[in-house]
Length: 557
Image 1: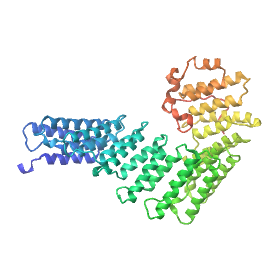
Image 2: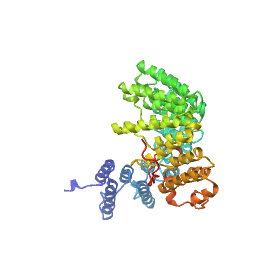
Image 3: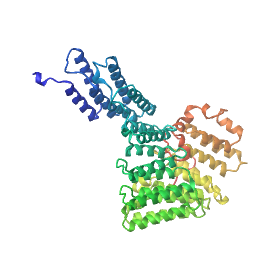
Image 4: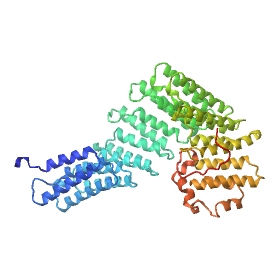
């Protein structure tokens, strides 16, 4: 039946179906069909010949597969297609590359997690421009091309990547303004650049992200419906300001952006409306500002959120994150009475949660932040109160098995921190006992392990609470902690620095076997610290190696 004989279109439809399925092995099946088409054509079948649509579908199958090496394979297929076209432009006119195929490969690089994905994507953008300039029609970079390259840079995590994404957007806008209608930036383009800048942590990134946002607003106001700024864009910029390290100026700028959002919404822009995340970002900016008025300003903002919510604006209801941020503001303030204020906020959360509102449920972070407030307070009984909060969390977890209140290593570290920086002479002996108890308790927990920060703080406990003239006791405890740290593989620069401050120079050299720096230490000592080098900032819950128990004073109760 010659009427039922498959042709190029038939194969293309099947290959495209494999591509759209995104299933495991779909790219391999698509390539098998491509190879079969080549073989049939070579054997004399005039109705079956791979064309640019065929290659585009196979390349798309790799782009959608998410498999390791997919981008490199898509790149190789494109290169093969171009080589065939250039070897015989007349016979293989149907293999002439076009914008769609290049865009698919660039998108594949953008979605990949390859180390050089962004540079590969931009190389293809440059190649497109060069080939188009050489006379190949239908091969001109468009808005999708630039947006995919920008997205690749945004996801790369490289230092300077956000700036490069910003530069590419500037280049797009300049070309569009000069008359290239194919390079009109759209919402996705702006979103990618704003996200890249906001998450980069680079100096000036928040201001640059805000500039891009302002351009979005201006384009939309000028009648460009393809560019619609949303609440998410504003919240992303607010988060960038909160994490910019800009102090009070950054917090005040965050408040101004909140007011800007409110004005846009009241003027009829329904896509931009402050929500709980918006207010939380402004609160976070104040909490991180280091300004003395930060906690009081944060309380005022929280009160305003409550007023708006009670007046009917359900989108700005305070939640656990809101209260946690306020507690964090008090903890960071160093103000007299800050710990008591933090505990008061916790009590408000507990009452509202008991009244039936789950949005106010205190969690592990809540309690850890309150402990941190006590640690920073230097007040009488701070270490004891910190331990009591930890005990309360553990008792509640044992009774309810509620994972939201389960203490973690950060909670334990915060208690040890309260011990290490005890300022009241009468509290020093008890603080020392508490720190040792907490460490022993950590070592009894099957799903918890001391990390580099734990050992740094425990060495601080030895340095600050044990008399310097009692060299024997200081050395014995410091050595025990350091050996445990070595065994669990969490030795880093912070641990070494604190060890050096705790013992004499000769004792230090003995403990490190007279090695000069971190790079010369045995890999076993540092194996987990290298994976989680930021453990020293008490953010990551590191889990590696075994932490040897010191068997000091029994279980923490």
